[in-house]
Length: 374
Image 1 (cartoon, rainbow, N blue to C red):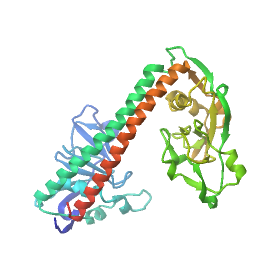
Image 2 (cartoon, one colour):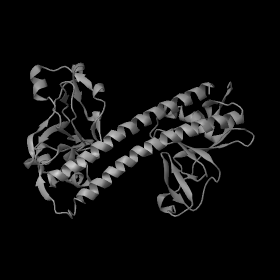
Image 3 (cartoon, helix red, strand yellow):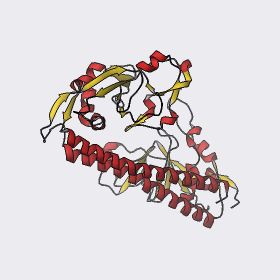
Image 4 (spheres, rainbow, N blue to C red):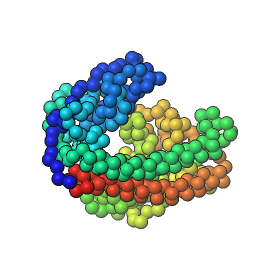
């Protein structure tokens, strides 16, 4: 495909969305309402009753949403509909724009936003309409594969949460009558705050777990951890061991208490100061079970009650952590859940690999399409 590039302003009517207050919306309405980040509700009427592309103007600047039926784009957005005299595919355009980070067009005023003239000046290649539709169909199929694999990952997580609830019940009401015990009575080492080193000490040396190194109870990509130069004494004091548990102690309230279970490590690894480390008596409580409990609403409610607020962040201390009340089912039941979690984790690794492959395929096809090589 060889095609000239044209600015969006020559191809589309680019209009401002219209204000629609939350209390004026109709939750049972047939039309979707779109804000800068995407779907935000429903309404009984539509501002646009044809397919359109919604572009975040304020807030999630440059975020794209494809509205197949139309709907109501609110005043934090632009919406784009093809000019009648132009042969342009909305799906093709959506894919082409998805390759471009429109956020770089952000203008900085009192409220950062996207200027309509800047958006109108963005150019995309415009081959014949049949070619646009062919490219859009290929990219739609690749995107569908990517989304289905992402959904499979999400379903595995949902299943595990459901299995946990079925096995152990709602900890707030404790219908199964589990013993409730302060975490401090189960700890064999710690809690211990992590290591602070200035930025000049980073770049080489020993791997260090930082707050951005873990998510959803797991430390991600051990081989990609940052490294820090330490003395032998520091390395020994802050060395992590398999089945240690890390808990974030300083962060925004929404991320406070974020935790991770330390896996088997291939080399000496330490942990940073904005978290604390503890080990537990694994004859009474399985570390993987405890990590799951620490991620529940039951423990989060305890974290929020104990949190101390400061400028732009909150914190919990070692005494707060030892005071957490933890449900303690029989160890055999804990092991049963942990074994199920391990089996699902093995499957999830395959799903994750599939997601990565699908993302690579989609990105490659998008690049080729934009270059006119698809």
